Image 1: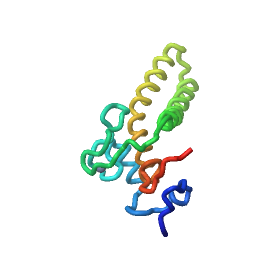
Image 2 (image 1 turned 180 degrees about the horizontal axis):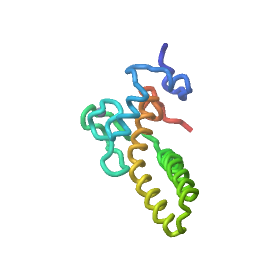
Image 3 (image 1 turned 90 degrees about the vertical axis):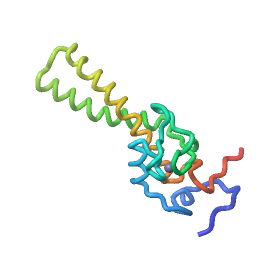
Image 4 (image 1 turned 180 degrees about the vertical axis):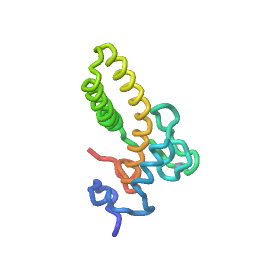
Length: 146
Ligand SMILES: [Zn+2]
């Protein structure tokens, strides 16, 4: 298979077609989940809580093309919601404690889980984008020309 012409917009086929190095989706997502470079698994992905480093200190991979945007927050809401809501239902059905006690359980639980999960999930999303050659992680990426 040949590379698309340089001025052609990427299509789904070119994004999913492995060209050049082979990228393993789950390995990249796992490395990102643990805060490591999705390519080599050695360098740190984050330089601050949710700020990605400019590039990998080990292999030099440029992290700036990632576009995680709001996806990690949406995923955290889904995951935490699937933990806290059943917990709330079980506690309500089993014990029916006063509302103040329920708030004292659910609000800190939600906050701690969200803060605990947001960085690993963002790392997983960056790993996913790298493995799928999304955005600037594609060697043949061409900026949209409007
Ligand atoms: Zn690396």
